[in-house]
Image 1 (spheres, rainbow, N blue to C red):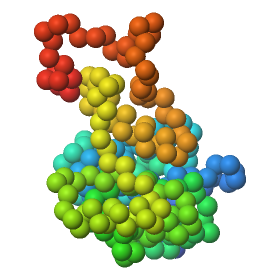
Image 2: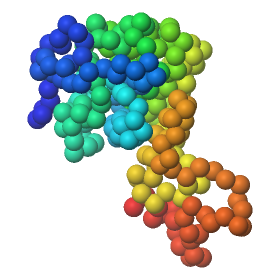
Image 3: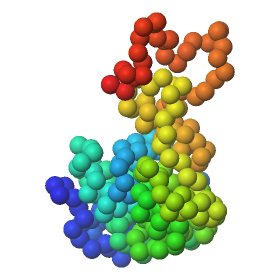
Length: 240
């Protein structure tokens, strides 16, 4: 794959760029604990990318685990290269580096989000099969009682999927599928993506300020978007 740096073994310190060199030093301030972002191979890779962009804009440090499956999905859904995506994180880890910082509970973080989360990753997390760094980092997040949010992207759902969701929920995770809210009257796909990403980051106490929040209708307050004229068909044009 053009631009894919996944061709070298991970360095022993667990933080790599794929060529054996450190990307950036880890944040030293105690109040700057990073958020771990996992991107699996499920469709919807744009959610993980927008998550990284929003966190950088908000000054929140990030550690990225970009799975092998995500590297296969990327060229089908996005014009960015793997290097482009890795550059959005403060630190990124080789997906097979089981000695990476995020594989240990002693490495303090503010939690982890998997965006998108494939049902394969969901199953690994639900059953404790930690054979990838993404699954191990998620397992660590659960055992340390930190917040884990999974943006599961699959439909229809089998009973196995539902049971795995119930299991991770019982273990403390939050299932947050990227379900659009149409009360924001989205005009573009960016509106839909920003709202889903913003609502997930709300769960970590991070306000992106990038989407309209619900308010009780009030004649004294303007709508988020102008109300459509009679005869308009917003449901057909909103996402064009």
